[in-house]
Length: 412
Ligand SMILES: Cc1cc2nc3c(=O)[nH]c(=O)nc-3n(C[C@H](O)[C@H](O)[C@H](O)COP(=O)(O)OP(=O)(O)OC[C@H]3O[C@@H](n4cnc5c(N)ncnc54)[C@H](O)[C@@H]3O)c2cc1C
Ligand code: SF4
Ligand code: SF4
Image 1: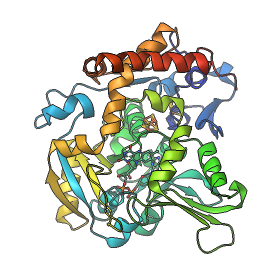
Image 2 (image 1 turned 135 degrees about the vertical axis):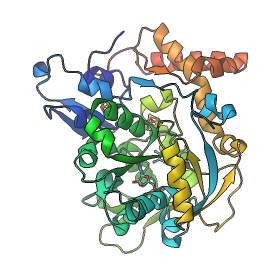
Image 3 (image 1 turned 180 degrees about the vertical axis):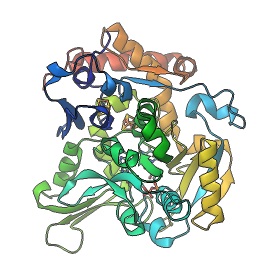
Image 4 (image 1 turned 90 degrees about the horizontal axis):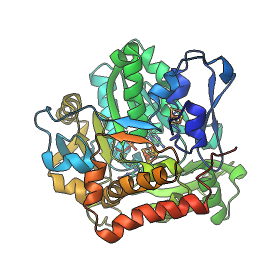
């Protein structure tokens, strides 16, 4: 079944909540809303006037992702291509600035790279996500131009965020700028660049954080409840940072110190049950469309009190250049490492990717619109599963489709 428009993408649960459709609509007809138990979703106003324009569909990563062939690119690590996309170099290390390292989710690499681009490469700003000061459970896209703003908005937010809603700020910036987002956000950025050459000229570098899925706002509300706190009393919610892997902390309005703290492991263990449906179909957890990707080097046990570390991937020449210059200029302390470190660090992301072909096959068998993913070797890596796992990938999805009524469009 072919999806006609963004409304259908949402109704068939394929929206990832990136916000790119709101940017792309030439009539400014798409508004974004946070659906409490789902994620950020577009609503089209006066859809009947849309005519033949499909700009929103052209930028949407929810229903379609295609890798341009990168076989010809020299220097890519062959053994990583099937599972991880284009990878030129893998690095491990941290931001040299102790404040960025401490406040960042992992080792603050994403923030340090963006700061280098801002201060030394003359970039105009950084489009990224931070907590919405007025609504502490929500996120807001901001265009940071100062070190202070960048640091304030560092740290991962395990709740709905749509950084592509403000791509216009990059497009209208006087100088090329930095984009930071999740893998689906960066994929949407690439599609938007293809649609709008004016935007393409202004993207100085794209940085992706690794991502295993975005929990809904309901996830955070329920987590607060489980800690004895009411969402409406919350003055600040942090998901990570302030150490590594950092703590989930919630501070009540009018209080100075957090009223609740939870380890990252326990908080993610709770929140992951609230991930949006599209995330279960996501083939790209490591930002394959970005110039640079940053994640956690989970390949080893983290000692109590250890300071933050990041895993950094150079995916393009532009990314490689920026990483090397950031090291040279003293913004990052990184050591080159091998392909194995990436594989050992993100076992779950690879496991998920291996099941995706089976999950999509189940959807197609039920006649449900399945996203189209091209250039991810999904069939090949699914075939490498053993027989039991192959069957589980298809039957598990089939069971969910029946039990949760996913064979029907969403009505609200
Ligand atoms: C939903 C989610 C799932 C994740 N899953 C994984 C995983 O599977 N494996 C793993 O290794 N790491 C995961 N992370 C963590 C993240 O990839 C790493 O912490 C990464 O190394 C960034 O750390 P850093 O210290 O370099 O970034 P920092 O210097 O702390 O900067 C983080 C940057 O990310 C931006 N950002 C924060 N939250 C969001 C968001 N929700 N959407 C878009 N941009 C955001 C901020 O604006 C900031 O610029 C996840 C993060 C999120 C938000
Ligand atoms: S995935 Fe992004 S572009 Fe597609 S419908 Fe959702 S918010 Fe819009
Ligand atoms: S798992 Fe994939 S689709 Fe879901 S938020 Fe992360 S990058 Fe986007």
